[in-house]
Length: 311
Image (cartoon, rainbow, N blue to C red):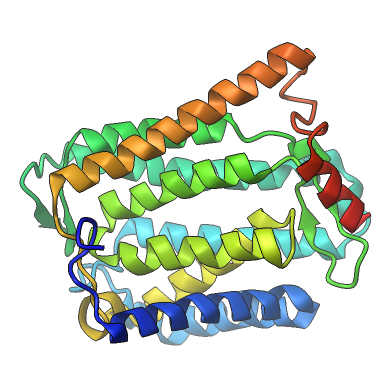
């Protein structure tokens, strides 16, 4: 970890694991029952919005939670969670094409917000590193590289017409065409985004947060990555807006502020997303598919397994 982060203690790793498993546990609580989701993503945010966030996320506060980006990210993540719940528990709505394709739009907007932030960090001209809105950033070519990777990640979102609600009691939102290749490309991009734009918080909001939705996607409820991602992202942002001093004062783990590390992380992100785009384009060309209508990975074992487990 010495290349990406400063030396981490046993206590730091223990806190990191606690964050990881807490996010996974609350995600399971939110998805397992309707009331679990309502409590976490409707009732709790309303209480926090009225009584807590006006103080802890006030504009200009020393932790940087009062920026437009944090507020937009918070409510866009919560809006996604609420919409997914409405979709999951409304049989009539789940049959409408526009309702089924809307999750792809929400996902694309979420990625676009972060890509714009990467380009914005480049525009700061903080070539040797600087504090902007109380967050340390270092501008460089990595911002452009990862911004482009994010745009490629949006372009490669596919198979949204095949989203359906599982037939089991949890009624999960299943997206079978969102296979491991896209998820990993997203993870590489999003980690690079957090490393570039929220550098000294990325130990948690990068590594822990991404694993908290990727692990359930592979080992707990396959095919429901977007639902896992929306839940864990909303949970993390609510936590940060409520206890903004966590990553800076309570359990800080700083990056090494090494320009080579920034470059390599974004290079991996860009390379992964270029490879994904090339892979998808080849399948589209080879199988003569329409990416706006067809599911690209319907012939893969992963796709077939997810469908079989949820219909």
